[in-house]
Length: 479
Image (cartoon, rainbow, N blue to C red):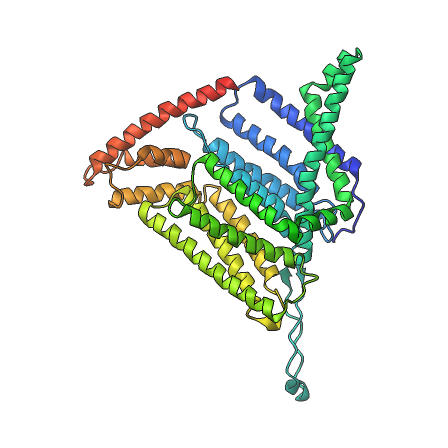
């Protein structure tokens, strides 16, 4: 049975945070004193991730209208088990000591499932669909009216929109408030030392006190923010207002560029500047559409002139999608797949789904203005969650796809065996690249280029093993 709206308890949220802080310190202490390995490391990382995630899921499902207690427990327990196992599988079970993993995909997947997957799971409704009315001629003839169709599942888009933004704003606001509270606690500790209460100041600076204090402050901040529904709505309107749209889009694009140069792995090497400009325009159009539609409860139809302009803009967006696709296809045909290109193709598919889905509302006026935005966002949200989960796990890891493609190109002769970058194959694809090198080092001697392939693979194995082992030792000693 669905729950009724209840008042969010700040004390309850702070208690969850306190329990989280104590658990985190209890898990961190044995890891700092000893080097965990084998199954102990697997269990430790699984528990540590669950302790971090489960309270966050409790905060995100707090006081959601229509969410039953049973479903809330199922969401918290299910995601609180699946996501830690996914992260542990990526960073512990598949991790080799002589090679450092560099993929952040599991963490991004955990964030996507927390911010997007939780609202989708929480607001899924099961209700009877309204039957279509028969033509009046059939009623005159005495035909029986059809009964309501079988019950179906659907999502109320307004609830999805409000919950997603509520959780996002509350999460980052609580981070800031918790940091402010921790800084105030540090000032109190310093003041205690200055007035001669050094013991109190020393206690406040102890790691268990700091960890427990911040977790408790964060939980209390989440409770305070979630209680202020009016403030959350005002913050959401401010962020989604038209005057803040362009700076927000430019900030996101600038952040992507900084991240690209930080990792030194461009998504599109050929025609990258063109692709970035077109991708920025597409992002701006998608964001602008959503800021105009919002929760879909108050949508004003534009004038015929504005409608024609929007139709032209959406046709231009289709052209931009085509140009980006051509750049990506040309790069793949030239150099094969890489992990970044797999992710680029996935992002392109999401953008294409949004552009095509939004564009449908401009050509079928009888269903209302912007009628396709809500179902498109729901569908793309599901695709995003499913795709991220597959690409960030061994089911369809982007690095595995790239490594298999590079092997096939090398064996088919599409890539010259004597000029192939075997070291790059390992460095860009982590464990899957190492497995690819081991496979190539045992290739059939009857292959036309077996000598070059075996020699290059063995040399790359020796080079990456030696270099990455020393790098791992240096990082361990510094820690």
